[in-house]
Every structure is written in structure tokens, then in C-alpha cells.
Length: 214
Image (cartoon, rainbow, N blue to C red; front, side, top):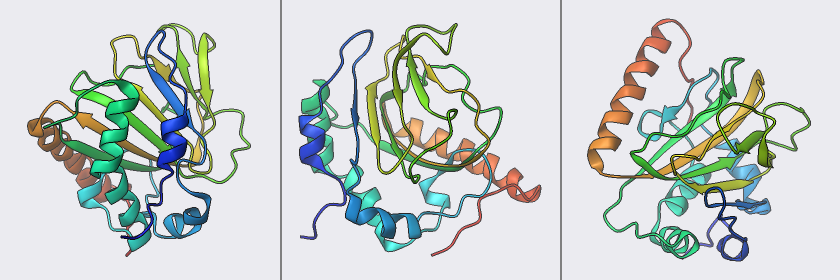
């Protein structure tokens, strides 16, 4: 069995903050020696928005990462880390390549998403903006619990509680993010992927869809 491109030991060792909602951060969750190949095989998403995995084309190193984060080893580690059962809960993955000025507004994720995992695939992040902030409430981006640097394989995981507020100061430019969610049931995956596919179709008509490569 080939070595996983993710560092499960680092994930297991990462502390969990429980208040005001459960989250953990793992620098270099994507192994350093796997980053170059994965970034070379990353889907060439050149416009803002989230694009579901089924409509993207990508190379084998990226495919190995997708298999690892949706595989049973990581799922069991997440269950232990957050004290949840993911049995029968499907996964859904989207990828971003670019951030628009309108992105980053304070929000919580849909209640159909049980667990959110964000994996950042950028080089060392020098901009002061574009850094995800976990927040104490919906009213102030500076009321910060923690800030997540969006660079070099950093991973954030959190339980999607009603108070799991997050956002970032607007950044416009390349910003690679993989989002993995465990969701309530398969109908959520179908609905969300259909929504994203329709959105991507109209973006392509306007010349704003993802370019793709193998």
C-alpha cells in the first residue's frame, strides 16, 4: 500500500479547542514531500467559486490526496478526534483556485454539513488578508478565536455548530482551498453537486468556469 500523502500522526496529535465550538488546526497536514506533485496536479480552477470534484479534471497525485481524505483511515481519525460517529455519512469535496473580493463574508456552514475540513494548498502566504478567522460571533471579523494561515498544506477541521462563525478579510487573487464535508445524507451530496454543476455551466457560458487538465 503506498504511503498516504497526509500526516495522520500530526492530525492525531493536534489539540482540539472545544469552546466556543470544536476545532483543530494541523500545519503540514499534507506532507511536505507530496506538496509539489499535488499542486502540479491540482485542477486548474481560474475563476472564483467552489467546484465539485466530479466536474474537475486533475492528475494522479491530486487523486491520491482525494482518496486519502475520503478514506476510512482519516474518517476513523476524525471520529476519534471530534467524538462523533460518521457511519453512513457521505462525503462531499469541492475545490477553489481563486478568491474574489466578495468572498470571505462572515457565515456558518449549512446545517446539512456535519464536519468541515479545509485544506490550503498555497505557497507561503504573505498577504495580510485572506486568512480565515474563527470568530466568537457574526458581527466582527476582529473578534477572533483563531486565525488560519492558508499555506502549504495547512488543515483546519471543525464541527459545524450553529455558532461556528468564520470569515476573512477580502482577498482577490489565487487562493487554493480544498473543502471536505461529511454531510447528513446522500441527497445533500446530490443537491449540492447539482447546484454547483449548474453554477459552473453558466460560468462556462460567460467564460468564467474552471479550466481543467489531466
